[in-house]
Length: 295
Image (cartoon, rainbow, N blue to C red; front, side, top):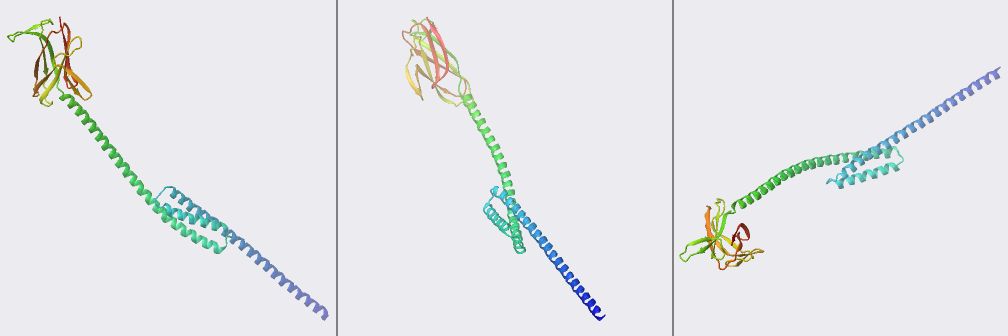
């Protein structure tokens, strides 16, 4: 009877030990499971943080590239900061993503983000200043353009006015008349249309009144040509620039801005019948002409 009781007690103790071992095993399994799950969760968090750091750095790099392309005076600083970001991105990519490394990378990324923010603020300030200067420059260009246009208009008006004054100040030679006469010994002149009787050709013309012309001595060159293209009279030659003029005589007059009549006699001998041409020149410029015929 005692033997049976001892056996029962022995079995009960064994069961208790088995139960305890089973509980310990379950506890160990649960601990291992929890550790594994915690490790995976931590790994997922670290991967997520790594991706976030890389994404943040990529955004900062894109901002810097855009700022660099605007060719501001900060280009060197922007390029240096971009190189730092690219180096940090390379380091993050190579890392195993442990807690210590990610903590360091996040700190460096935050520092770079702060630096980029400061630079971007400076870039924005420079852009605004450049925009302001551009507006001022364009406004100045418009003003200068308008001023030049106005000046050009004045120059053109002055040129036209000068031309008008120059044209208006030129003297007009009017009422050119010519005829042949027979000079008597008494001094009396008898008009004739016969070449054989003519010994004087009378030339007369008017200089019109002009208040804006310069007063003073005026000289006109009178040219009388016969039907054979011979110049009568003095047959002197004068040069005006590239032009030369052979003339019969010079008519000089004192002009005082009022109408004045000029009369000159040209002595001739043994002239032939035919057409005669009278030209009045102001230097090399022909200002009046007429013709007459002798039988």
